[in-house]
Image (cartoon, rainbow, N blue to C red; front, side, top):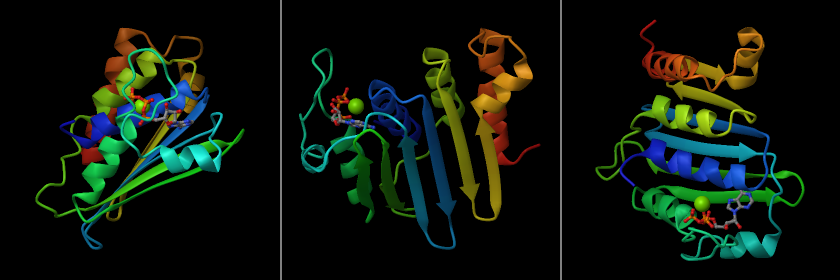
Length: 179
Ligand SMILES: Nc1ncnc2c1ncn2[C@@H]1O[C@H](COP(=O)(O)OP(=O)(O)OP(=O)(O)O)[C@@H](O)[C@H]1O
Ligand SMILES: [Mg+2]
């Protein structure tokens, strides 16, 4: 995977598969601490401790169709190659939080990529799920919340192509701090 937005998409799809109806994505990009953090929390079915143990093994999957069990090992590897760390906290029936940290300035640290497109893909595929994004870059903070947007849309479907494009652009411009 070429960029961290694609890893985020992949990990958030795990949350979808786990039956979550609320998925919170947090990205912290700190030049002061030389740290880049990606975390994805969900209220899905969670995992017991035994499953969490096995999850970082390549090819561990509980899915039968078109799954290779590589989503988590690939993100873990990407983080560890950049002096980072990887952790999963999960509780059966409550949810899961997956977190990867990277040395921000590491030569191999993948770029963020197109976060707006990844969020758009998630929302378009799963309009019923509430997604939030908190993006922090040093002292700057941007937030997106699909539940709040749904309220203002007042019945207009969030997955209309025109709305999805607005979401994509809002996120991509918002995280740059260009408005
Ligand atoms: N958020 C989550 N909630 C509950 N179970 C999870 C979660 N994330 C991962 N898992 C469990 O860990 C397994 C491995 O996840 P991983 O993303 O590595 O592979 P996969 O999703 O099965 O396949 P792939 O990502 O290659 O399509 C999943 O099959 C699932 O059982
Ligand atoms: Mg997966």
